[in-house]
Amino acid sequence: MFFWTQAALKQYKKRRLTKHLSTDIYRRVSKLFLAMFILIAINSIGMIFFEKMTPGDAIWLSFTTITTVGYGDFSPSTLAGRAVTILTMYGFAITILSLLAAEVIEWRLVKTEKKKKGYWEWKGMPEHIQIINTPSVDAERYLSRLVHELYDTPSLNDLPVQILTRKFSNGLPESLEKLKVLHRTGAAEDGVVIHKVNLHTAKHIIILARDATDSISDSVTFDILSQAIKINPTANILVEAVLDENRQRFIDVGANVVLRPIRAYPEMLVRALCHPGTERLLENFFEAHGDSIHKFTCTLDNIEWKEVVMTCVEHNFGTPIAYFNGVELNSHPAFDAKCTGDSIAIVVKEGYAFTSEQVNAAFSQ
Image 1: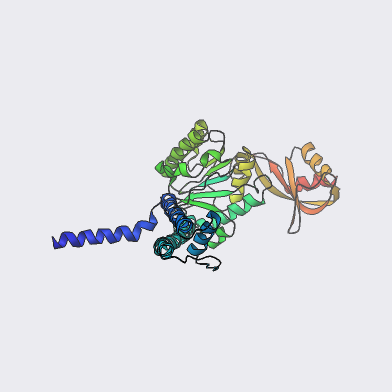
Image 2: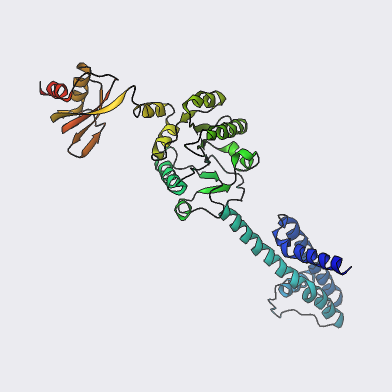
């Protein structure tokens, strides 16, 4: 019996200590408000009956008493009236009001803590950019650069950014907090959390590879992509594919953009998000086969850029995209810009058979 009593006592204390953690705060606050107004009504009726006050004066006295303001313009003088006030106001109502204040303060603290640790469910979020997963290495630096680039892009800078990740369960790093990034703690593939990030209202969804070097990440991405398509089939969805052979699978499911994980340049991801299809061209420049960008030494002496382009086209060199003047890079100048430099960057075809000398000679004619 003694041990049963001790166990019951511990359970009772646990319920009391954890009562404030209940998510049903609205019910508790409603009950307290109801009890407080019942006590105010009882006290007011007592003042009308015993003190012969008008209803307005009686209610005024009840409220000034419960808030401990105590103006002193009205007060009970009969024994019965004072007894009612002591019982209803001093005995219960003032205590209930303090409990209400404590509930509100506790709720605000819990709300702040949930927001900080990523457990707050944001309601009614408008069109936003949803980032799912984070890099396994150096996530803070990558996300900081990615969000900066999103905010610097005119078509994206007015959209809220939310991150769904397990990385920051104790709160976002300061660098991301300063960027006003929202976040939700959890794993999208568990099938529950993904429904709590307002994915149905997202304008853009970015699904990063959990591990850029592990092909298993593609299986996780495929599962998340399938769920995202069901929730929001109209969103612009970008996914990362570790294996090139999985690209078509992602496109067949519904991804708008598929690219390889490039952790050093999140800017490429943003460009692909804004201009789907350009990622294939950018990736192609890094491959040994296909079109590529080469730098050729040649002298440009105050020549208009349109003449540079025409000269390259006429001699089948390729497409010029920039010129250099020492270390200074001039990318895609205006057609009538005067160009003076010592080398030129040209997009050339695989297996090109011309040299810097030939390029320079063409511009010397």
